[in-house]
Length: 328
Ligand code: UFG
Image 1 (cartoon, helix red, strand yellow):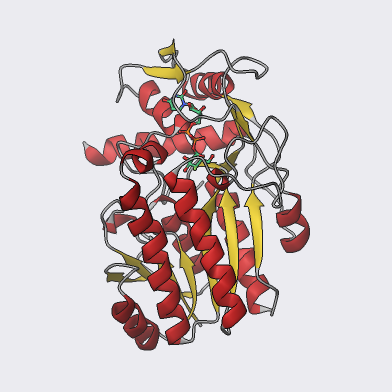
Image 2 (cartoon, helix red, strand yellow; image 1 turned 135 degrees about the horizontal axis):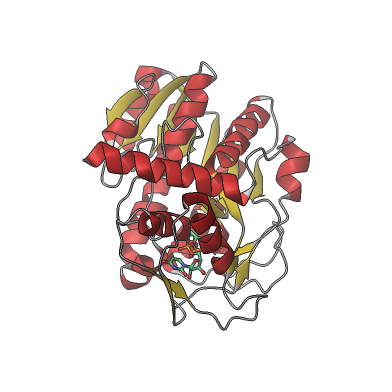
């Protein structure tokens, strides 16, 4: 059995490669290195440069390496960019996924795991969502991912392949052994930005909106540690290999933290009173997005192990410091 990880040079994909390699699996990484880094790919994996949407290339890789499963992380992920450049998202996410799925079917791949997003829900209100909460994506990013979910369902109904969709909430943190982390310098994610500010890579940061109908007026998110998220992928792979049905699961802890709480935690962990200016709302931000995570726990037996916000921030901060010394 060999697992193909697309986007294995990126933030989340590189953690998947670590998990699979640690478990003694054969891993092939397919990545075009547009946003990923070749140094982020664990040395135990075989790296094949290229595009996940290149059908002939992927079919050849499936034959060459005897690939039995695909875990598909590659894609574009910046929500505001998807609004100004939707075609990029329909190309890199929807069209690429379509071709990758065709290659999977042609090559006889048995199981396909896909990285989806909480953005498929849209404005959710303050209550936690569940998997059958109505889907109403607010951005081309969310729609580009939802279309891939639909394609997988249609293809699995027509061909001999099963799939798992994981809808990620706010992924953060880094490998506790500091082997990988979020390495994109221009990342816009809150915990990354706050850690960069604490370390002086940014002079200050902004808190986008303090007048939301939330307990402290700032937006609430369900931050999930990347290592726990990856553990859900490993369990899902086991489920599919054991003949389990195709499924769609939210990956979240079922609790939320506000922007202020996150910034204060970064201050506490770093010991640095970083500058965070209160500013206007950022367009398109829902006040609160959390999910119960009931289904992923009950179906897969998933147990969170790194859910304390302090640990999420500590590992993110430690990785950020590591990047600074690396780049010196
Ligand atoms: N925020 C700030 N200042 C910053 C950065 C973020 O106040 O410098 C706030 C945002 O306004 C938001 C919260 O922190 O209220 C979280 O923002 P992130 O950018 O970290 O994450 P999002 O919730 O916007 O987006 C994430 C993923 C997307 C995914 C989405 C699903 O990054 O890929 O969740 O809801 F689509």
